Each structure stands twice: as structure tokens, then as C-alpha cells.
Image 1 (cartoon, rainbow, N blue to C red):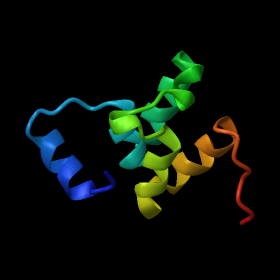
Image 2: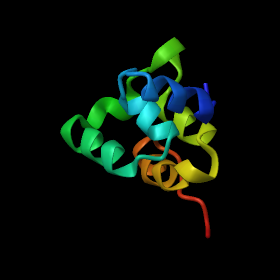
Image 3: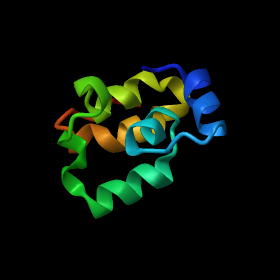
Image 4: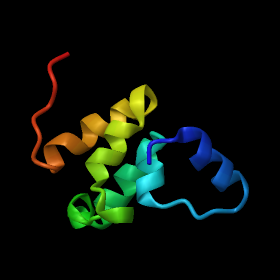
Length: 81
């Protein structure tokens, strides 16, 4: 988890995009749409039981906006800028 290069390679070779990959890759538009459609998705365990917020954390700088979007929804405080 958290290997952007592997995720991008798999997606380039027809792997399915899911909310967990989209979050780790910083695809904020996909993350927001999924959360709007399924608000409880922030609490659904992902692959290997890893929560969505942790996928955002592992995404690094490119997933920062997704992380900041998900923090309050996951019950974590916003970080000070």
C-alpha cells in the first residue's frame, strides 16, 4: 500500500480504479463524488482492512487535498496551515 508507481502501473494495465486507489493517488474529484454518493464510505475498510484515511496518508504530497477533505469526515481534526 502506498506505492504510487505500482498503482499507476496496474491502472495503466486495465486494473479497476476504486475509491482507495483514487484516494492514494490524490484524485480528489473521484473521492468527493464517492463520498457524496456513499457518505459512510469513509468508515468502510478497504483492501486488507486498511481504512480510507490511511490510503490518503500514504499518498503523500499528491494526496494532501484528499487527506484534508477526509480528515473531518473520519473524525480527525484539520491540520493547521
